[in-house]
Amino acid sequence: MDKILLYSAAFFTMIWGTAHLFPTKSVVLNFGDISTDNRQIITMEWLIEGIALIFTGCLTGLVTYLDYRNEISQVVFLISAIFLFLLAAISFFTGFRIAFLPYKLCPFIFSFSGILILIGGVFHGAGF
Image (tube, rainbow, N blue to C red; front, side, top):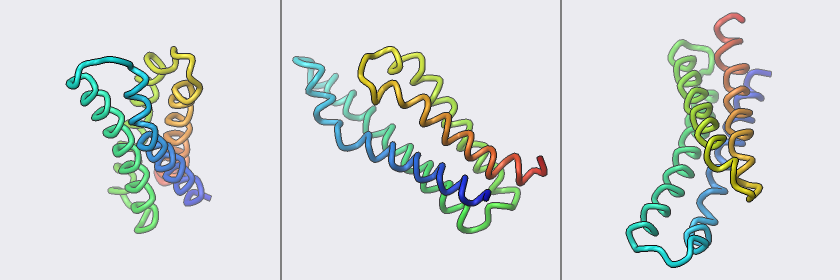
């Protein structure tokens, strides 16, 4: 059951990260007539968040596949969950306030994935 939770967290995180990459150009265009520097900054931020999510999901999936029960895996899972909870908090106080539904989903998807990682990889593996 732990592996299912961990693989599910990895999957949701990677899918949401991938979902950040595709609309980047249209998101930037929606800002209207802004400077080239601002356009590049927004593009960079969207791509970085997507890549960071994909990396976190891949790392979670790979560690689960290799050996999800050892101490190093526990640390990787804990750091990944903390990272997702931090992104959830940032998203809650920023994007969640925007009327666009995908922005409102970010804190919930990040938190859900973080919780799955904690349950499947940290709490159970630590004997909870």
